Length: 157
Image 1: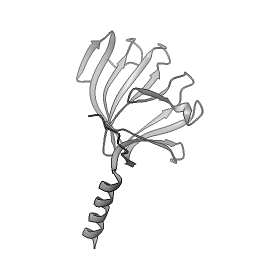
Image 2: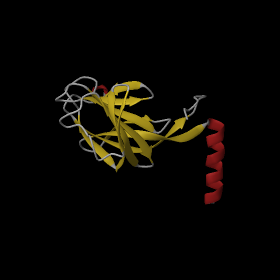
Image 3: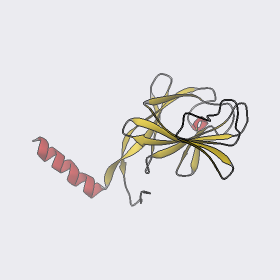
Image 4: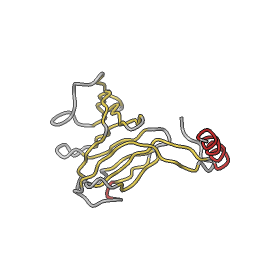
């Protein structure tokens, strides 16, 4: 019975072009899901403006199942609150400091900044958190999967 159900679902998935993709899940302070964002390449960037330096910081993440892996941090100004060690490599690329690392998280608590452009970059598009919640809201980022209709979209990578 279970094998027949699995086969039927597989056939429907082929016909309807349905598939699972990694997803970034944004939850409110009570744990309710605000949005699920498909990550066709399994990656996103947490983008914010540093509160002291007033310069952009980009934290690069990959989704692995239900885990978020921080793979590198890029920033413009070296100093207070910015990583300089604890990573695997410290370099300069196109005038930005880059720390390469591999740190895994099950979730990431965030306070939405009052400074504009605090959000996530997915496939080159900045999605500010204020699209879903007011400034200073407490949110949590986590990873999962979501079912999507492919509809002819070609997934990168």
